Image (cartoon, rainbow, N blue to C red; front, top):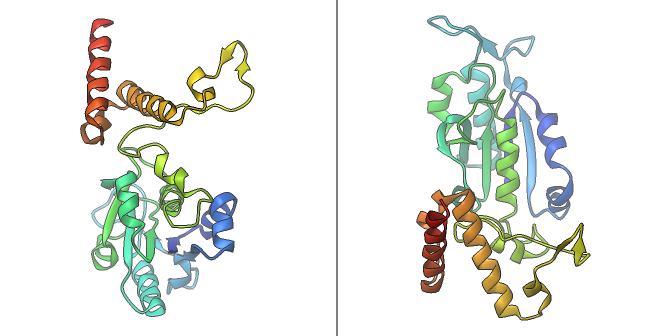
Length: 248
């Protein structure tokens, strides 16, 4: 998969994503990343890309011309109009389902705004999706773009050495991940649960699923509405709910 990020701070993107799992994935050419400086497309001799908003108000607004020209240059380069994602609190909220949807694309373009945002005309002309990292405001779109690229990249075949990891992590079947343990068997008086030392794989799987259900009920009960559960797991969930009500 090819990722392109339109930004005023390209070094922030390349330095933030060029290490660890994603860095190795780039070396193996499983994914590629290009951070494109919007200032390079400014017609202003000082590479200025912002101006005062019409109608007044605080802050500055990014001009439409550099953004539009940058996107059109990329279209020419790759030979078609790509999916362009504008990072904004006004968009649909990013989650694992959205990541899975986007991972099916051959390339993705992320448009990072700054100041008070980008001239609406540029957005209307080039943007295909508006996506939010959550209900809060950041200085720019770079951090949300990096977060989303990291999440989506993990779904690209071969990026994770153990593809099973992508299948069983948090939000698989809309459940949070079960607790994990490693050596030593006892630490500060706390022991690893006996079932994990038993070698009985069916019991371990049952325990892990039950732990995932219990954690989701405790911390993210909203996820359970769309959780994929067996009949026995639904019964276990109802049992947990009754115990919670009983204990207040």
